[in-house]
Image (cartoon, rainbow, N blue to C red):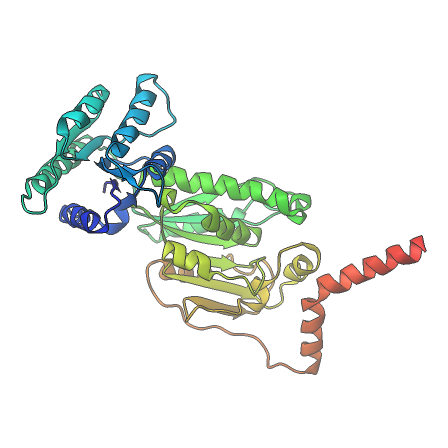
Length: 390
């Protein structure tokens, strides 16, 4: 499958162009849109598109007046990058201009020697432009199919391990996926040995978030139509969720489903943000109700919690499924869980699971102590400092 960037600020015109592209069996997830010069250049800087369909009358920035030369400015910038053999912008393989001034477009496009360049006059009545777009893209698709030796898979599972480990469970998951003859490609995200010290300091956590964002963007550049599923454990759940929050949507791959296990996120964390942003189909949160490591995370790590023990409070109308199992922080790494995760990524609804005991007074007191442990620790340290100093 190919990826198309449509630069068009007019909603009606964009829908017309989009419908023509979809007639070529290019799915909606393979079609991206920008509406200004700056937004387009940012997209071309961060992602590789096969086809660029460019309206010449676009604004310099979002919410500004459109300019007759807006699209030409885009061509001039990326043409300059090509001319000086730069690599700031990822020039599309096919460039199609929709304009009334085809001679101006072709003049600016003349230096793109390695790209197919076409220009058509857009008209609501005369649909010659639509036939031209179809012919140009079909020609490219045919050439790409004949030159492709290996077709990348369109279904990917990214696994992310926790801190203070090398993620050996990822190897077990990889073996299981291959044993099942699964259609999924499995990619292991590694940060080698992540120190507890860095885990405790909020600014240092973001280094791995940025690295994972780059991984996702690289994968999107290689295969814009791939659907990404994520399974993350412990600190990996923080990396995954924060990366999905921060990655620009225009450079993000298509997201399918997400599995979190032993999560260090707070139970009050609002996952709706990433669900709405990426149109995620579902999130499973597997919890170990005897997970002592998460109690320590709740008490000692600023900004983190134990959603992997107590679950997320808001299930977003059932899109987030909390499952509760008797066990500790590493209970998830066996074929039973692996099977569930593959079934979930394949679109199956998982059975409910809740091994929690009915609450009593002791369990309620214990839960309150765990919940307010950060405050208790802070007050204890404050009292100790006051006692020593005064």
